[in-house]
Image 1 (cartoon, helix red, strand yellow):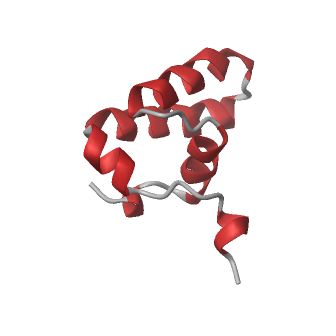
Image 2 (tube, one colour):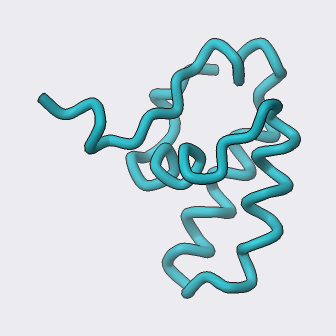
Length: 72
């Protein structure tokens, strides 16, 4: 699975809560989801679902860098 299946919003969210492992990242997003508005909950749920489909190698191979840091 490549990072291309993630929306820009999902990539930015994952980058904010990036953990050492895929499981760490999922747990960190899940911990704050109750503090999000409805739109962000949708983004978070999508990111969690896609992260859950990855294995650790795929997670490590992908660079979750916020969009504003890659724009030139």
